[in-house]
Amino acid sequence: MATNRLRRRTAIAGTLGLYTLFAAHDGTTVARAFQASESARTDVARTLPAPREASADRRSLGEGGQANAKLALPEAVDLNPDPRIVEINLEARVAQVEISPGTRVDAWTYDGGLPGPLIRVHVGDRLVVHFSNKLPKPTTIHWHGLRVPIQMDGVPEHSQPEVQPGESFTYDFTVPDAGLFWYHPHVMSAAQVGFGLYGALLVEDPADRVGVSDELVLVLSDIGIDSHGTLESPESGGTTGMVFGREGNHLLVNGREHPTLVMRGGAPQRWRVVNAAKSRYFELELGDETFTQIGGDGGLQERATTRETVVLAAGERADLIVTPRAGPGKELTLRALLFDRGYGSVEYRQPEDLVTVKMASMPPQAAGTLPEVRRAIEPLSTEGATKVNIDLTLGQRSDGKFEYGINGVPFSKGRPVPARLGETQVWTVTNKTKWSHPFHLHGFFFQLLDERGAPVRPLQWKDTVNVPYGQTVRFVVRFDDRAGSWMFHCHILDHADGGLMGMVELGMAHHGKLE
Image 1 (cartoon, one colour):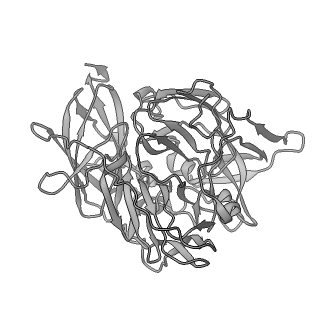
Image 2 (cartoon, helix red, strand yellow):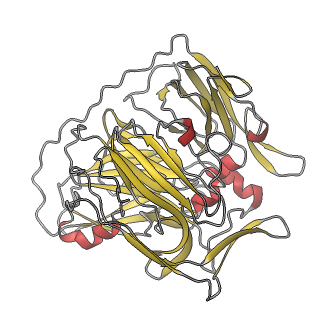
């Protein structure tokens, strides 16, 4: 029995309509939903087996139990009795979801929920995901941030074939690192993530000694819904919309618009936060409270830092401890401040409320001393490292359409970055465009360097980093023995689809042949 894990039973039922993408006469791809005929309509109810144990949820719900339970994510159920193997079924399908009272939309989902179920494993576990595609289009799953074998990375033509409608694929790998990661498609990424295909994957380390048992996984995102109540076209605004990066008009936290969270004064809570939006940045503020950041993309960082706000570019994660000081009965608001990621991101806009935090009507918890959270991280040596220069560029074709590129060349015409097994490289990424770009490297962590080439403190492992417009970011990466073609790209997914992608050919001598 997996006695240290919560395996919650989830039963999801919904009436599905068919969903299709089609090309209009002007070539614009638009999203349209239509119901199947009465004879073909089926109520789909998927009841998963009961969990192997009935342990209580680790969240301290207290008097806010109902509100906090609504915010908590449903969890994927482990079907394997081996305590070191987590085996789940995961289905991509169209389902109606409710993001706020009375606001429903037919979204693209994993297991009928928005976001998909939280996958919870322990570091070193084997994860087996039996994935089936019930969508009207091909798809895959990319395990963002996880150091998986190339065959499990979810990138068509480079790691696996597309999973066609009605087909299935089994992902099977060992999870080597603790931290919060997430999963999403790598086919028509901007459209499919924008339609709702994303979920969190929490890799726990029982020995992390953080000392905060009350925790909450928060998936930040947005979704675009038009005036007819259907998903907005992923091609709205043409290439001009692509250049900016389309944002949804409804901000979501765990699939809910403006939910409520109850906390107790003086009681610390651990927030594991991921930005799963396809374009939007989130700069988080909680009134006059502060955030203690203990980790990010690749788990715990070298030491904790205190922040008044926390910025998450698309794809980034943060591990935060929040200890509210507000008194009983007071309210706080977690807000998304305006963040300047380029033209159009702050003009004529206002900060937006994300979560109402209600303070429980009970005396504040007596102040205690939390364990000092530290992690020993060895700086990667840059001595003898290969230098790689990457320019993020934007051009305009002869037909007037815009396209992003790497070193002036869009992905379709680009040349890969060669890397040898075991090689260390120092990347200098310069943003020559007027919009910021979250730079994501598949399959590997890196460490940030300052302008002098020294490690940025506190040390942490990153897989996604914001490259502000007009600025340069440097990092050092050491490639291991997992040969293959590994992707890097902007995680504003419209930018990636618009050409801002590239490949690292690791251990590939010539024309895709292994060294």
